[in-house]
Image (cartoon, rainbow, N blue to C red; front, side, top):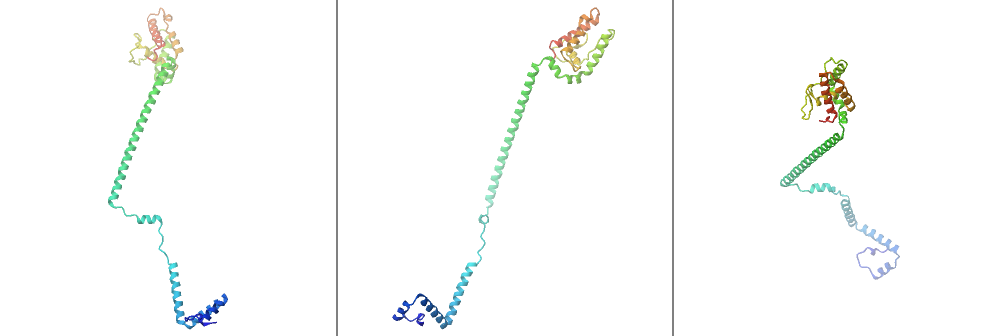
Length: 260
């Protein structure tokens, strides 16, 4: 093997021709051998080169594994990078928010008042419509249907007056020497009354007493009228006059003044 492979002197023509004719494997082997011989001949240079190579490797390794500063998240960066709001801006936004809140509150109060007003109007219209329907219903009712509607409350209000009249009437019809049946004076402020001068009550007061039966209807009234028909009391003086007056008051009720 030629030592000139690693020599710094120029190659001769013969040496260049020889190397050119060598197979690839032999050229590689000669190159390795020449390198080793060169390294052995110059130990200081080899050590320096190895130290340089190691330092270069360490430098690359250190650069590769050196820990990078932690990456901040987008949220963290945005918070960190956001400039602190100045006191002027804070006061401005605070004032703006308060103005918006006051405006919204005023708007809500106005809407609530409008809703309450609408509710009152609807309730009033509903009440008026109900009253109109009830009035129309009452107007279309016969006097007896109207009376029957209030039969329970009439019994509660005038029951005692009717019981007293019924008991005294039964006793008088059985024995004419008994006192003529008396009607309770309920009091009446109406202007269309037919008043019995002898009995001291108007036909409305007679109606109140008879409605106290709780079964006040046309059949009951006609039966009561018949009991006091003048023909049944002919020739009995004052009794006939009183019976005739009561008969007329009952007739007025039957004629349709039940709602008066």
